Amino acid sequence: MSDGSWWPESEDEELSEDQQQQQPIEDPSSPPGPRRRSPWLPLRTQKIHILGLQTPGKYLAFALAGAAKSPEVVLLTPRREPLEWWKKEGQGITLTRYGRSETRYGATLEVLKSSSSDGVMFNGHHQQSRPSEEEEEEPISQLIVNTNSGGTVPMLQSIRHRLDRQSTILFMHNSMGIMEEVSDMVFPDIDTRPNYILGLSSRTVIPSSTGGFSIGFEGLGTMQVSLVPRYFEEMRSPRFRFHAPPSSTSSRSPVEPNASSQYLLRSLSRTPEIQAIGLPYLDLLSYKLQKLAIRAIIDPLTTTFDCRNGDLLGISPAEELMERLSAELSSILLNLPEIKHLPTTPRRMNRVHLLKQTLGTLETSANESSSMLRDVRAGRTPDVKYVNGYFLKRARELVALRDGGGGAPGGGLEGERKGGRGGNGWGGAGGGLNRMMMNFVWTAHTMKRKQKGEYVPFDPILSTSR
Image (cartoon, rainbow, N blue to C red; front, top):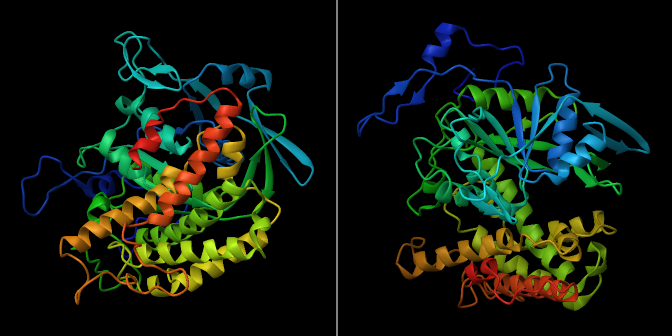
């Protein structure tokens, strides 16, 4: 390790017993003031567990199976139905790319134990939250979360007894606000919760028409990862100011790697079909926020009008809506405490640049349908709560900050009074356009459920956004 970086110098770097004793891990029992450090604990297992059976996780399992030093991969699911598919397809994962199919074996499928009397509810199944004395379950060291956004918390609650401070969880969602929910509802104790890794992938992988454990590869892409500081929630405070180490020229945040996080990062980086790239946390967070803002424009509009991405181009009313959304999202992003002071924020998050990036994305993906639209068409719950809903929540935080007198020096928040065409700042309500987009998406989702005879008048997810 060099320059205080958590990223391994080489694939073959190993820690000797003496080095393991020298690696810092915060001691939860240390008194206030300078914190003592406890020895680096050795890796418990090289197994990599993947929670959920979404398409991106199947691709990671397929890619890891082709690595030179392939780790054991365990797919976790709360339902027994996929077990029949797994057996039927020969307990392998098939990837079709450029017209050729390849099946790889080596992964295993584990159905999470359930109980009708002790556990949490997930899609109608009670998930056991503690193992019985007769069936002790092994701890999980490396976990990749591959669930839909709304299912992450209940799925993790069902296995939280198998995760601890020595574990590492990789979040790969293309939405945000999930890590905060997990910390609040599953691991509220910062001193005992697992390490988090934030991930972002641009590869295009889709379910195969045959279903099951067959997937299709549609385009090249990259994967960026970063260890998340244990105090990441504090970065949302207006008092947060990041100061890079004197020897660093980037916005690297202090992190606390352990054996499991180092092993997971190394496995992802040395696998040829993944080749994960490590970035400083704030840099990756900023990039992911920009990507989420583009999603917050494209996905709800294509869902509302039930159209492909490219169909929004060349329609003046639609382009005006995109311009208004870009202005509102920009006013939120420019004032987020955790990225406000990054040198790239003014350029990356201004409304003109956001609109330009959005139009460029529409052009390059003109024949594709957004993931939110695909969910609504299929009758699945869309993740709009973690897209536009995330920005709505952050906008309300900023309005509360402004009204509480904690805004930027000189009064007000940056961009608040910069209107322009369609740019009404905070709109008097804080993220008003994002709330409208949420209502549009939920209306489309509700109408689809009505058509299928599955409509339920009260939706708890919608109620929490109001």
